[in-house]
Image (tube, rainbow, N blue to C red):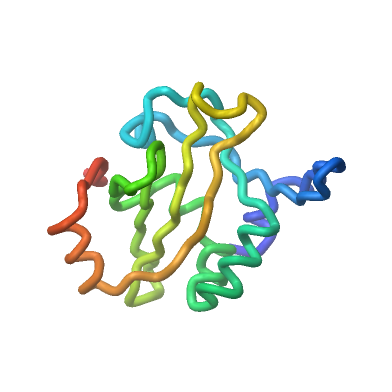
Length: 145
């Protein structure tokens, strides 16, 4: 996969705030209803600011996030409930890596501004040991069959 898969289309610049937003496509609600069935948007985005956060705070995950974000969103292995409402921890094992990639995904509901979109907040790598810890101690709300 190539970097431009994150950037489906051109980045949209919200002029009044000068924020660059990259569309990642739409979510499959057969998978993501487990986070919230009260969603109001299908599109999922990542902002340039969020990408910079991943690059600075989680550099080990940055390249995989760029290359595999659509694969992770389209075919997650697990989704864990996050402590924040309407937010899930989306996990997928990357085939060429010993670790799994984790995306934090915020689902926009009727309680949010209707102009907001579902958003990838951040991403990091988790080891097999950490994944097993999550499986024991976190609420698994989706598991690939």
